[in-house]
Image (cartoon, rainbow, N blue to C red; front, side, top):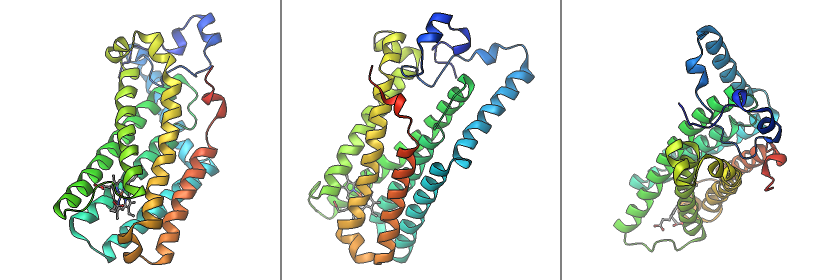
Length: 262
Ligand code: HEM
């Protein structure tokens, strides 16, 4: 998919020198589509996907994060199968699925080096984050509707307040991220250069949101009445520990040089 952002291979030497990747959206131009040598372009695409898979399979921190998120999701689902709770069940079910998607969407990008890998990584990232957003919005809509059905107070706990704050910021992040990545949106932000200059903020808010996405279910696991009454302490420890492992695995895979605001 074309973004209109310049590809590293066609940038001038001076711009290539000053570009350390901080202000560059992961999306580039689809120059490979115009490449007459189809085989070479397909080989490059395969290498890009291989490098993304490599990010998941060959880094200790990524493996730890995946073990963590899978343990969290499976234990949540086991709790729900053991204690079916009608409409409410869809809330933890969808939120845990969303966290799996968010986790994988970040892990595939840690790190992306070549322009091709950045472009493919961006596509995979958008698919995962899109699925995550749909799941989390569905899960929040269900809990709000369920509370309305039972005439229960809204946003009356730390979990509820943190949850609605996180989801609101996520919607903002998704809208701005799409504007930054595509030419039509870049125009709205004042042009391609200005849009690219704001990319580092997307990355920073992304990691802040990631921390909120870990803390929100942690508050449910440690303090929501329904969870306390319908799970064993072992299940709660595994859910909490799984979330902590996901957080540590992703955050230790972070490249601090990419977080500078200069
Ligand atoms: C990032 C993931 C999550 C988000 C964004 C989220 C969001 C929310 C929100 C906004 C509410 C309040 C709705 C209202 O007051 O109208 C809520 C309630 C609730 N959530 Fe979650 N949730 C998440 C994960 C979970 C998980 C994993 C569980 C269970 C393991 C859970 C269990 C509950 C329970 C029991 C309530 C009702 C009690 C309360 O309001 O605190 N949530 N959630």
